[in-house]
Length: 222
Image 1 (cartoon, rainbow, N blue to C red):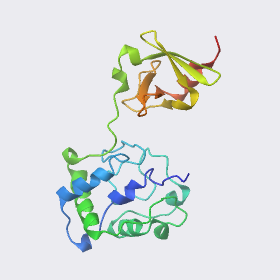
Image 2 (cartoon, helix red, strand yellow):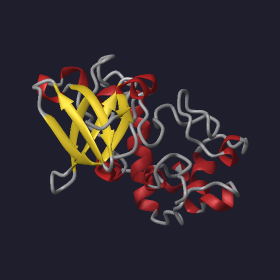
Image 3 (cartoon, helix red, strand yellow):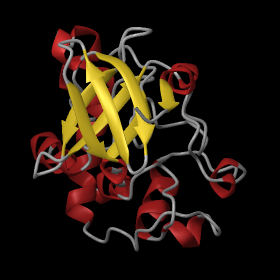
């Protein structure tokens, strides 16, 4: 499975056009940007699967502050994002930066690119217009029944006991152990169980840090 340079192939679908092609429509650009919001934010420093797209112009490729998931090819490319390089990247990512791992063939629609660039330029200077990124729940406000007290593993099953003293028995393949160090992550020492999956048979336990995960998850059969 190939990684994505900016964390999400949708990045290239929501980046930028060339002013030489003519001014775009900001409202249409805002609608087009909805294809990108699952992976990207326009808020400075707020990264998701992909990096924040705030203050993109004039920045060197692979240097968004605080984002650590770039490929080596992108980081050493020396490319600076401007109208010309962004247009080349969107048309042919592999052609602009050989060896990058962006799995997208290119965006050919000039009208969409014009609209997006118009929106991104305006949104970058007007915080009220910024959109993007998944709406993550604030795990610091999780109810007692979602707070995890203990996690043990036995055979092919995780036994997760929550604050209401219920023990949830989950097949090991269906439970994800995650960390969330962001401002909306759980409080230290109070991991949170989050449901997932269409059948309600999957879940994730989210910890405040990797050390907690190692300290709380035990291999023990009773």
